[in-house]
Image 1 (tube, helix red, strand yellow):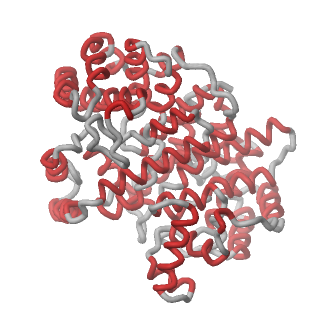
Image 2 (tube, helix red, strand yellow; image 1 turned 30 degrees about the vertical axis):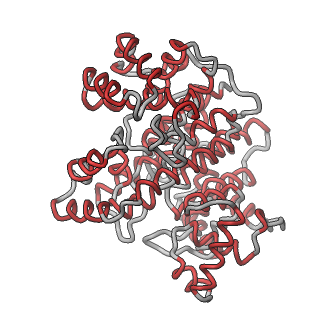
Image 3 (cartoon, one colour; image 1 turned 120 degrees about the vertical axis):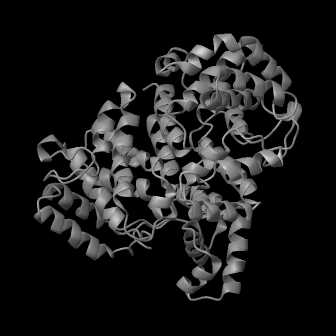
Length: 504
Protein backbone atom coordinates (compact mmCIF):
# COMPACT_ATOMS: atom_id res chain seq x y z
CA UNK A 1 0.00 0.00 0.00
CA UNK A 2 1.33 3.45 -0.91
CA UNK A 3 1.39 5.17 2.46
CA UNK A 4 1.76 8.59 0.87
CA UNK A 5 -1.54 8.04 -0.94
CA UNK A 6 -3.18 6.94 2.30
CA UNK A 7 -1.85 9.99 4.15
CA UNK A 8 -3.09 12.22 1.36
CA UNK A 9 -6.59 10.81 1.67
CA UNK A 10 -6.59 11.14 5.44
CA UNK A 11 -5.36 14.74 5.19
CA UNK A 12 -8.84 15.53 3.84
CA UNK A 13 -10.18 14.76 7.31
CA UNK A 14 -7.70 17.14 8.90
CA UNK A 15 -9.00 19.82 6.53
CA UNK A 16 -12.54 19.21 7.79
CA UNK A 17 -11.38 19.31 11.41
CA UNK A 18 -9.68 22.66 10.82
CA UNK A 19 -12.76 24.17 9.20
CA UNK A 20 -11.06 24.22 5.78
CA UNK A 21 -12.30 23.16 2.36
CA UNK A 22 -11.20 19.74 1.17
CA UNK A 23 -7.73 19.56 -0.39
CA UNK A 24 -6.49 22.72 1.36
CA UNK A 25 -3.63 20.68 2.86
CA UNK A 26 -2.87 19.08 -0.50
CA UNK A 27 -2.61 22.50 -2.15
CA UNK A 28 -0.35 23.75 0.63
CA UNK A 29 1.78 20.63 0.20
CA UNK A 30 2.16 21.10 -3.56
CA UNK A 31 3.00 24.80 -3.25
CA UNK A 32 5.61 24.14 -0.54
CA UNK A 33 7.15 21.30 -2.56
CA UNK A 34 7.44 23.54 -5.61
CA UNK A 35 9.20 26.19 -3.53
CA UNK A 36 11.51 23.54 -2.03
CA UNK A 37 12.57 22.46 -5.53
CA UNK A 38 13.09 26.11 -6.52
CA UNK A 39 15.41 26.60 -3.55
CA UNK A 40 17.20 23.30 -4.17
CA UNK A 41 16.31 21.80 -0.80
CA UNK A 42 17.23 18.16 -0.34
CA UNK A 43 14.48 17.57 2.26
CA UNK A 44 11.61 17.27 -0.23
CA UNK A 45 10.05 14.35 1.64
CA UNK A 46 10.17 16.32 4.89
CA UNK A 47 8.48 19.30 3.26
CA UNK A 48 5.74 17.15 1.73
CA UNK A 49 4.91 15.20 4.87
CA UNK A 50 5.06 18.18 7.24
CA UNK A 51 2.81 20.36 5.09
CA UNK A 52 0.43 17.49 4.49
CA UNK A 53 0.12 16.77 8.22
CA UNK A 54 0.09 20.41 9.31
CA UNK A 55 -3.37 20.08 10.95
CA UNK A 56 -2.57 16.84 12.77
CA UNK A 57 -2.97 18.64 16.10
CA UNK A 58 -6.14 20.61 15.43
CA UNK A 59 -8.43 18.29 17.42
CA UNK A 60 -6.34 18.96 20.54
CA UNK A 61 -8.07 22.21 21.46
CA UNK A 62 -11.48 21.54 19.89
CA UNK A 63 -13.18 20.90 23.24
CA UNK A 64 -11.83 24.09 24.79
CA UNK A 65 -12.48 26.14 21.65
CA UNK A 66 -16.11 25.04 21.64
CA UNK A 67 -16.50 26.13 25.26
CA UNK A 68 -15.23 29.55 24.31
CA UNK A 69 -16.81 30.08 20.93
CA UNK A 70 -19.46 27.37 20.63
CA UNK A 71 -18.04 26.16 17.31
CA UNK A 72 -14.40 25.07 17.06
CA UNK A 73 -14.49 25.11 13.26
CA UNK A 74 -15.73 28.69 13.29
CA UNK A 75 -12.97 29.78 15.65
CA UNK A 76 -10.21 28.18 13.60
CA UNK A 77 -11.59 29.67 10.38
CA UNK A 78 -11.96 33.12 11.97
CA UNK A 79 -8.26 33.35 12.77
CA UNK A 80 -6.84 31.43 9.79
CA UNK A 81 -3.91 33.34 8.32
CA UNK A 82 -4.09 36.17 10.84
CA UNK A 83 -0.83 38.00 11.57
CA UNK A 84 -0.52 36.94 15.20
CA UNK A 85 2.31 39.44 15.70
CA UNK A 86 -0.17 42.32 15.37
CA UNK A 87 -2.62 42.61 18.26
CA UNK A 88 -4.82 44.87 16.17
CA UNK A 89 -5.13 42.16 13.53
CA UNK A 90 -6.13 39.53 16.09
CA UNK A 91 -8.63 41.90 17.70
CA UNK A 92 -10.01 42.78 14.29
CA UNK A 93 -10.65 39.13 13.49
CA UNK A 94 -12.33 38.69 16.86
CA UNK A 95 -14.67 41.59 16.27
CA UNK A 96 -15.45 41.03 12.57
CA UNK A 97 -15.30 37.30 11.91
CA UNK A 98 -15.93 35.40 15.12
CA UNK A 99 -19.40 33.83 15.32
CA UNK A 100 -20.65 36.10 12.55
CA UNK A 101 -23.24 33.53 11.53
CA UNK A 102 -24.88 33.64 14.97
CA UNK A 103 -27.65 35.89 16.24
CA UNK A 104 -26.47 39.23 17.61
CA UNK A 105 -26.84 38.40 21.30
CA UNK A 106 -25.02 35.11 20.99
CA UNK A 107 -22.31 36.69 18.87
CA UNK A 108 -21.71 39.43 21.44
CA UNK A 109 -21.46 36.84 24.20
CA UNK A 110 -18.96 34.78 22.19
CA UNK A 111 -16.78 37.79 21.40
CA UNK A 112 -16.86 38.81 25.07
CA UNK A 113 -15.79 35.32 26.24
CA UNK A 114 -12.91 35.18 23.79
CA UNK A 115 -11.79 38.72 24.61
CA UNK A 116 -11.83 37.85 28.33
CA UNK A 117 -9.51 34.87 27.71
CA UNK A 118 -6.36 36.36 26.12
CA UNK A 119 -4.39 33.24 26.96
CA UNK A 120 -6.58 31.01 24.79
CA UNK A 121 -4.46 31.59 21.70
CA UNK A 122 -1.29 30.53 23.46
CA UNK A 123 -3.04 27.48 24.91
CA UNK A 124 -4.28 26.48 21.43
CA UNK A 125 -0.78 26.79 19.98
CA UNK A 126 0.74 24.65 22.72
CA UNK A 127 -1.95 21.99 22.55
CA UNK A 128 -1.95 21.68 18.77
CA UNK A 129 1.83 21.52 18.46
CA UNK A 130 2.16 18.96 21.25
CA UNK A 131 -0.48 16.70 19.71
CA UNK A 132 0.92 17.04 16.19
CA UNK A 133 4.38 16.08 17.44
CA UNK A 134 3.07 13.13 19.43
CA UNK A 135 0.93 11.73 16.62
CA UNK A 136 3.72 12.24 14.09
CA UNK A 137 5.81 10.10 16.42
CA UNK A 138 3.06 7.48 16.41
CA UNK A 139 3.23 7.58 12.62
CA UNK A 140 7.00 6.95 12.76
CA UNK A 141 7.62 10.13 10.81
CA UNK A 142 11.29 11.17 10.36
CA UNK A 143 12.72 13.45 13.04
CA UNK A 144 12.68 16.45 10.70
CA UNK A 145 8.95 16.11 10.08
CA UNK A 146 8.26 15.82 13.80
CA UNK A 147 10.36 18.91 14.52
CA UNK A 148 8.63 20.90 11.79
CA UNK A 149 5.20 20.07 13.17
CA UNK A 150 6.34 21.52 16.48
CA UNK A 151 7.06 24.81 14.67
CA UNK A 152 3.81 25.33 12.77
CA UNK A 153 3.04 28.49 14.78
CA UNK A 154 6.60 29.81 15.08
CA UNK A 155 7.73 32.95 13.21
CA UNK A 156 10.93 34.10 11.55
CA UNK A 157 11.12 37.05 13.97
CA UNK A 158 10.81 34.81 17.04
CA UNK A 159 7.40 36.16 18.10
CA UNK A 160 5.57 32.89 17.49
CA UNK A 161 5.02 29.88 19.73
CA UNK A 162 5.18 27.68 21.61
CA UNK A 163 8.98 28.01 21.95
CA UNK A 164 9.75 31.32 20.16
CA UNK A 165 12.11 29.67 17.70
CA UNK A 166 13.47 32.19 15.18
CA UNK A 167 15.50 32.63 12.01
CA UNK A 168 17.83 29.81 11.04
CA UNK A 169 16.66 27.75 14.02
CA UNK A 170 13.45 27.10 12.10
CA UNK A 171 13.43 23.95 10.01
CA UNK A 172 13.59 24.69 6.26
CA UNK A 173 10.31 22.77 5.91
CA UNK A 174 8.69 25.00 8.54
CA UNK A 175 9.74 28.16 6.70
CA UNK A 176 8.15 26.89 3.50
CA UNK A 177 5.06 25.67 5.33
CA UNK A 178 4.45 29.14 6.77
CA UNK A 179 4.58 30.75 3.32
CA UNK A 180 2.61 28.06 1.50
CA UNK A 181 -0.14 27.98 4.12
CA UNK A 182 -0.54 31.76 4.09
CA UNK A 183 -0.65 31.77 0.29
CA UNK A 184 -3.35 29.09 0.23
CA UNK A 185 -5.51 30.94 2.77
CA UNK A 186 -5.12 34.42 1.30
CA UNK A 187 -5.58 33.27 -2.28
CA UNK A 188 -8.71 31.30 -1.38
CA UNK A 189 -10.28 34.15 0.57
CA UNK A 190 -8.98 37.27 -1.20
CA UNK A 191 -7.38 36.37 -4.54
CA UNK A 192 -4.00 36.44 -6.26
CA UNK A 193 -2.95 40.03 -5.67
CA UNK A 194 -3.84 39.91 -1.97
CA UNK A 195 -1.88 36.69 -1.47
CA UNK A 196 1.25 38.10 -3.11
CA UNK A 197 0.93 41.41 -1.23
CA UNK A 198 0.54 39.67 2.13
CA UNK A 199 3.62 37.53 1.57
CA UNK A 200 5.61 40.64 0.67
CA UNK A 201 4.30 42.52 3.72
CA UNK A 202 5.24 39.74 6.15
CA UNK A 203 8.67 39.10 4.60
CA UNK A 204 11.37 39.18 7.27
CA UNK A 205 8.87 39.32 10.12
CA UNK A 206 6.45 36.42 10.17
CA UNK A 207 8.02 34.76 7.14
CA UNK A 208 11.57 33.80 6.18
CA UNK A 209 12.87 36.12 3.42
CA UNK A 210 14.25 33.38 1.15
CA UNK A 211 10.94 31.48 1.22
CA UNK A 212 9.01 34.67 0.41
CA UNK A 213 11.36 35.54 -2.44
CA UNK A 214 10.99 32.06 -3.90
CA UNK A 215 7.22 32.38 -3.90
CA UNK A 216 7.16 35.91 -5.30
CA UNK A 217 9.46 34.80 -8.13
CA UNK A 218 7.46 31.63 -8.84
CA UNK A 219 3.90 32.77 -8.14
CA UNK A 220 2.89 32.64 -11.80
CA UNK A 221 3.53 28.91 -11.86
CA UNK A 222 1.40 28.30 -8.77
CA UNK A 223 -1.90 30.02 -9.44
CA UNK A 224 -3.18 27.16 -11.58
CA UNK A 225 -2.54 24.74 -8.71
CA UNK A 226 -4.37 26.94 -6.24
CA UNK A 227 -7.30 27.46 -8.60
CA UNK A 228 -7.70 23.89 -9.89
CA UNK A 229 -10.95 22.11 -9.05
CA UNK A 230 -8.90 19.23 -7.60
CA UNK A 231 -5.18 18.67 -7.04
CA UNK A 232 -5.39 15.01 -6.01
CA UNK A 233 -3.72 13.70 -9.16
CA UNK A 234 -0.98 16.35 -8.94
CA UNK A 235 -0.26 15.24 -5.39
CA UNK A 236 -0.06 11.57 -6.37
CA UNK A 237 2.19 12.28 -9.34
CA UNK A 238 4.73 14.03 -7.13
CA UNK A 239 4.55 11.72 -4.11
CA UNK A 240 7.82 10.61 -2.55
CA UNK A 241 8.72 6.96 -1.73
CA UNK A 242 7.20 5.54 1.44
CA UNK A 243 9.01 5.98 4.74
CA UNK A 244 10.59 2.76 6.04
CA UNK A 245 8.73 1.13 8.91
CA UNK A 246 5.45 2.88 8.15
CA UNK A 247 2.48 0.61 7.51
CA UNK A 248 -1.25 0.98 7.02
CA UNK A 249 -2.21 -0.19 10.51
CA UNK A 250 0.17 2.28 12.16
CA UNK A 251 -1.33 5.10 10.11
CA UNK A 252 -4.89 3.97 10.86
CA UNK A 253 -4.22 3.74 14.59
CA UNK A 254 -2.74 7.23 14.78
CA UNK A 255 -5.57 8.79 12.78
CA UNK A 256 -8.15 6.89 14.83
CA UNK A 257 -6.69 8.52 17.95
CA UNK A 258 -6.73 11.88 16.16
CA UNK A 259 -10.48 11.58 15.60
CA UNK A 260 -11.23 10.35 19.13
CA UNK A 261 -9.33 13.27 20.68
CA UNK A 262 -11.83 15.73 19.24
CA UNK A 263 -14.16 15.30 22.22
CA UNK A 264 -13.43 13.98 25.73
CA UNK A 265 -16.50 11.76 25.40
CA UNK A 266 -14.90 9.87 22.51
CA UNK A 267 -11.54 9.05 24.06
CA UNK A 268 -10.36 5.52 23.29
CA UNK A 269 -13.44 4.66 21.24
CA UNK A 270 -11.83 3.71 17.93
CA UNK A 271 -9.12 1.56 19.49
CA UNK A 272 -11.65 -0.26 21.69
CA UNK A 273 -14.01 -0.84 18.76
CA UNK A 274 -11.13 -2.20 16.67
CA UNK A 275 -10.05 -4.64 19.37
CA UNK A 276 -13.59 -5.90 19.83
CA UNK A 277 -14.37 -6.11 16.11
CA UNK A 278 -11.18 -8.05 15.38
CA UNK A 279 -11.90 -10.43 18.26
CA UNK A 280 -15.36 -11.02 16.77
CA UNK A 281 -14.17 -11.10 13.14
CA UNK A 282 -16.27 -13.36 10.87
CA UNK A 283 -13.10 -14.56 9.13
CA UNK A 284 -9.67 -15.32 10.57
CA UNK A 285 -8.00 -14.99 7.17
CA UNK A 286 -5.13 -12.50 7.75
CA UNK A 287 -6.06 -10.09 4.95
CA UNK A 288 -9.70 -9.99 6.09
CA UNK A 289 -8.70 -9.39 9.71
CA UNK A 290 -6.30 -6.61 8.69
CA UNK A 291 -9.02 -4.98 6.56
CA UNK A 292 -11.52 -5.07 9.42
CA UNK A 293 -8.98 -3.70 11.90
CA UNK A 294 -8.14 -0.72 9.66
CA UNK A 295 -11.84 -0.07 8.97
CA UNK A 296 -12.61 -0.13 12.70
CA UNK A 297 -9.70 2.17 13.58
CA UNK A 298 -10.84 4.65 10.92
CA UNK A 299 -14.62 4.27 11.16
CA UNK A 300 -15.08 7.58 12.99
CA UNK A 301 -12.78 9.72 10.83
CA UNK A 302 -15.82 11.73 9.79
CA UNK A 303 -16.57 12.85 13.35
CA UNK A 304 -14.07 15.68 12.88
CA UNK A 305 -16.44 17.25 10.33
CA UNK A 306 -18.94 17.99 13.10
CA UNK A 307 -18.32 20.99 15.40
CA UNK A 308 -17.78 20.21 19.06
CA UNK A 309 -20.71 22.43 19.95
CA UNK A 310 -22.84 19.59 18.58
CA UNK A 311 -20.89 16.60 19.96
CA UNK A 312 -20.67 18.20 23.42
CA UNK A 313 -24.26 19.49 23.54
CA UNK A 314 -25.95 18.32 26.78
CA UNK A 315 -29.48 18.34 25.37
CA UNK A 316 -31.34 17.03 22.30
CA UNK A 317 -30.07 17.98 18.84
CA UNK A 318 -32.20 20.03 16.50
CA UNK A 319 -32.86 18.89 12.93
CA UNK A 320 -29.87 20.72 11.43
CA UNK A 321 -27.49 19.42 14.11
CA UNK A 322 -28.74 15.88 13.71
CA UNK A 323 -28.14 16.08 9.97
CA UNK A 324 -24.53 17.12 10.61
CA UNK A 325 -24.12 14.08 12.86
CA UNK A 326 -25.62 11.75 10.26
CA UNK A 327 -23.17 13.03 7.68
CA UNK A 328 -20.12 12.00 9.68
CA UNK A 329 -20.45 8.46 8.34
CA UNK A 330 -20.67 9.88 4.82
CA UNK A 331 -17.46 11.84 5.33
CA UNK A 332 -15.72 8.74 6.68
CA UNK A 333 -16.58 6.80 3.54
CA UNK A 334 -15.81 9.62 1.10
CA UNK A 335 -12.41 10.35 2.68
CA UNK A 336 -11.31 6.71 2.65
CA UNK A 337 -12.71 6.09 -0.84
CA UNK A 338 -10.46 8.83 -2.21
CA UNK A 339 -7.79 6.20 -2.74
CA UNK A 340 -8.55 2.83 -4.42
CA UNK A 341 -6.23 1.23 -1.87
CA UNK A 342 -8.85 1.88 0.83
CA UNK A 343 -11.96 1.24 -1.28
CA UNK A 344 -12.95 -1.94 0.57
CA UNK A 345 -12.15 -0.37 3.93
CA UNK A 346 -14.27 2.67 3.01
CA UNK A 347 -17.39 0.57 2.41
CA UNK A 348 -17.03 -1.23 5.75
CA UNK A 349 -16.16 1.86 7.79
CA UNK A 350 -18.83 4.04 6.19
CA UNK A 351 -21.53 1.53 7.11
CA UNK A 352 -20.97 1.50 10.87
CA UNK A 353 -24.33 3.20 11.52
CA UNK A 354 -26.32 1.26 8.94
CA UNK A 355 -28.96 -1.22 10.16
CA UNK A 356 -30.41 -4.42 8.70
CA UNK A 357 -33.91 -2.91 8.50
CA UNK A 358 -32.71 0.11 6.50
CA UNK A 359 -33.23 2.46 9.44
CA UNK A 360 -29.58 3.50 9.79
CA UNK A 361 -27.44 6.16 8.12
CA UNK A 362 -25.90 7.64 6.00
CA UNK A 363 -27.23 5.62 3.05
CA UNK A 364 -30.15 3.87 4.80
CA UNK A 365 -29.28 0.58 3.09
CA UNK A 366 -30.63 -2.75 4.30
CA UNK A 367 -28.98 -6.01 5.28
CA UNK A 368 -28.63 -7.30 1.73
CA UNK A 369 -25.95 -4.67 1.11
CA UNK A 370 -24.07 -5.11 4.40
CA UNK A 371 -21.11 -7.48 4.50
CA UNK A 372 -20.38 -9.71 7.48
CA UNK A 373 -17.49 -7.38 8.39
CA UNK A 374 -19.73 -4.30 8.27
CA UNK A 375 -22.27 -6.05 10.49
CA UNK A 376 -19.63 -6.89 13.10
CA UNK A 377 -18.28 -3.33 13.04
CA UNK A 378 -21.78 -1.90 13.51
CA UNK A 379 -22.39 -4.16 16.53
CA UNK A 380 -18.98 -3.43 18.07
CA UNK A 381 -19.42 0.32 17.60
CA UNK A 382 -22.88 0.30 19.16
CA UNK A 383 -21.80 -1.82 22.13
CA UNK A 384 -18.79 0.35 22.95
CA UNK A 385 -20.65 3.62 22.41
CA UNK A 386 -23.44 2.64 24.80
CA UNK A 387 -20.88 2.12 27.56
CA UNK A 388 -19.36 5.57 27.08
CA UNK A 389 -20.95 8.57 28.76
CA UNK A 390 -22.14 11.29 26.44
CA UNK A 391 -23.01 14.88 27.36
CA UNK A 392 -26.69 14.07 26.80
CA UNK A 393 -26.82 10.69 28.58
CA UNK A 394 -24.96 8.59 31.15
CA UNK A 395 -23.00 5.46 30.27
CA UNK A 396 -24.78 2.12 30.38
CA UNK A 397 -23.40 -0.79 32.36
CA UNK A 398 -21.95 -3.72 30.37
CA UNK A 399 -25.04 -5.78 31.20
CA UNK A 400 -27.42 -3.02 30.12
CA UNK A 401 -25.45 -2.46 26.91
CA UNK A 402 -25.51 -6.18 26.17
CA UNK A 403 -29.27 -6.29 26.73
CA UNK A 404 -29.79 -3.31 24.43
CA UNK A 405 -27.60 -4.86 21.75
CA UNK A 406 -29.52 -8.13 21.96
CA UNK A 407 -32.79 -6.21 21.75
CA UNK A 408 -31.63 -4.50 18.55
CA UNK A 409 -30.79 -7.90 17.10
CA UNK A 410 -34.22 -9.27 18.08
CA UNK A 411 -35.85 -6.24 16.43
CA UNK A 412 -34.01 -6.89 13.19
CA UNK A 413 -31.75 -3.84 13.43
CA UNK A 414 -28.44 -5.58 14.06
CA UNK A 415 -27.23 -8.96 12.81
CA UNK A 416 -27.84 -11.66 15.42
CA UNK A 417 -24.68 -13.54 14.49
CA UNK A 418 -22.59 -10.37 14.67
CA UNK A 419 -24.11 -9.41 18.04
CA UNK A 420 -23.41 -12.88 19.46
CA UNK A 421 -19.81 -12.69 18.25
CA UNK A 422 -19.28 -9.22 19.73
CA UNK A 423 -20.81 -10.12 23.07
CA UNK A 424 -18.78 -13.30 23.19
CA UNK A 425 -15.60 -11.36 22.49
CA UNK A 426 -16.50 -8.75 25.11
CA UNK A 427 -16.65 -11.43 27.80
CA UNK A 428 -12.95 -12.14 27.57
CA UNK A 429 -11.01 -10.85 30.62
CA UNK A 430 -8.50 -8.11 30.01
CA UNK A 431 -4.89 -9.08 30.83
CA UNK A 432 -3.04 -7.35 33.66
CA UNK A 433 -0.35 -4.89 32.55
CA UNK A 434 2.03 -2.43 34.22
CA UNK A 435 1.01 1.20 34.32
CA UNK A 436 3.03 3.63 32.15
CA UNK A 437 4.97 6.65 33.33
CA UNK A 438 5.24 5.40 36.89
CA UNK A 439 1.60 6.30 37.49
CA UNK A 440 -0.26 4.81 40.42
CA UNK A 441 -3.74 3.28 39.98
CA UNK A 442 -5.27 6.33 41.66
CA UNK A 443 -3.35 8.68 39.36
CA UNK A 444 -4.66 6.75 36.37
CA UNK A 445 -8.20 7.29 37.65
CA UNK A 446 -7.53 11.01 38.00
CA UNK A 447 -5.87 11.14 34.57
CA UNK A 448 -8.86 9.58 32.85
CA UNK A 449 -11.27 12.06 34.45
CA UNK A 450 -8.89 14.89 33.55
CA UNK A 451 -8.69 13.67 29.96
CA UNK A 452 -12.47 13.70 29.76
CA UNK A 453 -12.45 17.44 30.41
CA UNK A 454 -13.50 17.43 34.07
CA UNK A 455 -12.34 20.09 36.48
CA UNK A 456 -10.35 19.25 39.60
CA UNK A 457 -13.45 19.87 41.69
CA UNK A 458 -15.50 17.49 39.54
CA UNK A 459 -12.76 14.86 39.76
CA UNK A 460 -12.67 15.15 43.52
CA UNK A 461 -16.44 14.66 43.72
CA UNK A 462 -16.37 11.67 41.37
CA UNK A 463 -13.60 9.93 43.31
CA UNK A 464 -14.69 10.98 46.79
CA UNK A 465 -11.44 12.76 47.61
CA UNK A 466 -10.52 16.30 48.62
CA UNK A 467 -9.96 18.95 45.97
CA UNK A 468 -6.54 19.64 47.46
CA UNK A 469 -5.65 15.96 47.05
CA UNK A 470 -6.84 16.08 43.47
CA UNK A 471 -4.67 19.12 42.80
CA UNK A 472 -1.62 17.20 44.07
CA UNK A 473 -2.50 14.21 41.90
CA UNK A 474 -2.83 16.39 38.80
CA UNK A 475 0.53 18.07 39.49
CA UNK A 476 2.21 14.67 39.93
CA UNK A 477 0.58 13.31 36.77
CA UNK A 478 1.75 16.25 34.65
CA UNK A 479 5.26 15.88 36.04
CA UNK A 480 5.42 12.10 35.57
CA UNK A 481 4.17 12.06 31.98
CA UNK A 482 5.89 15.36 31.08
CA UNK A 483 2.89 17.30 29.75
CA UNK A 484 1.38 20.69 30.55
CA UNK A 485 -2.11 20.63 28.99
CA UNK A 486 -5.30 18.60 29.26
CA UNK A 487 -5.10 17.78 25.56
CA UNK A 488 -1.60 16.34 25.93
CA UNK A 489 -2.69 14.35 28.99
CA UNK A 490 -5.65 13.02 27.02
CA UNK A 491 -3.36 11.94 24.20
CA UNK A 492 -1.07 10.17 26.69
CA UNK A 493 -4.05 8.32 28.15
CA UNK A 494 -5.27 7.25 24.72
CA UNK A 495 -1.84 6.24 23.43
CA UNK A 496 -1.35 4.00 26.45
CA UNK A 497 -4.90 2.59 26.35
CA UNK A 498 -5.73 3.89 29.83
CA UNK A 499 -9.22 5.06 28.89
CA UNK A 500 -11.70 2.36 29.77
CA UNK A 501 -14.63 3.06 27.46
CA UNK A 502 -16.88 0.86 29.59
CA UNK A 503 -16.74 3.43 32.38
CA UNK A 504 -17.99 7.02 32.46
